[in-house]
Amino acid sequence: MNAALSRFTTHPMPHLMSARAACALLLPALLCAQTPATVTSSDPREIPLPPISTPMGRLPGIAELPVRPDLPDVLVMDDGKRVTSPAQWPQRRAEMRRTLEYYATGQMPPAPGNVKGVEVQTATVADGKVKYRLVRLSFGPEEKLALDIGIFTPAEGGPFPAIILQAGTPPGATPLPRLPPGPNQGKGENVLLFVGVGNNPAPRPSVAPGSGSATAEALAARHAEIFRRGYALVIFNPNDCAEDTTLRELDGRWSYRTTRFPPAYPGYDWGILAVWAWGASRVADYLETDAAIDRTKLMVITGASRNGKSAMIAAAFDERLLGAPVVTGGGGVGAYRFAGPRRSETLDIMELKYPNWFSPELRQFRGQREKLPFDQHWFLALCAPRPFLALEGDTDIISLPAAVQASFRSAEPAYALLGATGRLGVHYSRHGHTFNAEDWTALLNFTDRHLLGKRDMIFDWFPSEAELDAAAAEKRNPLP
Figure (cartoon, rainbow, N blue to C red):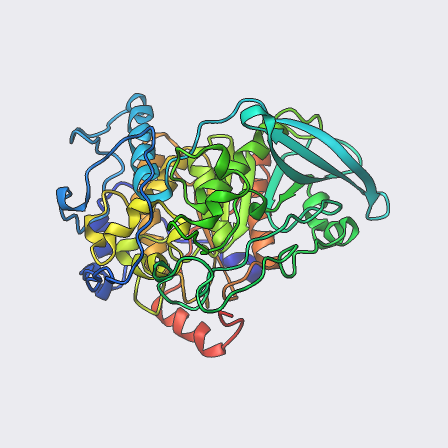
């Protein structure tokens, strides 16, 4: 077998099993005990966030929730009844989505139903092989929201299945003004200790550092394989939907709620990742009307790290999308209940550094992850029966393979119920916290198989503890 393809193969695994059975069969013994995370009390110096009243109302708080050491079963209804037929899945899916929106992502507004696009620029690049268009979308209340997207397609043929990439500003678009970062953003410190700019004020820059977009010619060259295989590439900047800053207003609000999309929907408590996911769905709204895009195929949504987390959320909540997130880390594909070993990111770490990415309700589970009424495998289960691919790095220390594997094995019963066994995929590339050519090759091989019916590959290989140790010893692509 070709060595480059051997990493996609695996041994057959049982699909219908409890999370505890999956743990005993597949995961290292030290993780099977699922030792609770160290309880982390709220710092009394934290400045509270103002509450936001949403249409969803109130769900049980942590004091009302039971301890659940195992991953909550995707096939058990809220009333305790087991899901045994596909006919019951829509009801269960709606229950799970409601729980995830309340506790994990924050509630999103409904689709606006009025997305329109105006072509702003066109160009032919890559020696005439690729067509590029800059399109400005408008939507939302009074059509006051806007989003620039860049659409690359092969110059001949079509329509093409689309790959939506969360990246930088599309070529030809004007980068938007950006808020400064929070005073201790990116330092691994508790960002709830400050409002305003703190002791380290930063002026509001006209644009984000390094936000100048690559040219259409450069992007077409970088992604030539996408077009060779017959796909369209659509890019947008998620920061044009919500600004990625931990900065807070003097009243305690997150400053991201004052710009971009959130002010149009003040009665929703969506975190930044949810805003980005909602933005991806508005891109999909437009692409369904674009003659160059094959609307009979699922649209792929991808991105790396925080963009990977939002890609996962978008795929879970939007049934038009095929998720292919990259190196998602904490709050991504891996189950919270298993995270922590090998310096991987935990719920506590994410809520210390970036609580603005998530629902404000998630903070109450710091130190008590075993009381979560969900876990990250629910996002994967909501994708069923659609294909889903997690792209990981074998030296990406913030994402624990055992936690990713736990999510996969505990989401598989939903796929089995719907006759879609084998559509959950994972690929481990030889790198750390990055998104490189090996990931793109795996992504395209996966979509070739599931969208175009071309390749017959299995994406179900997880590195062992020994393989992780060997990869770490090589010291390739360490986490920045």
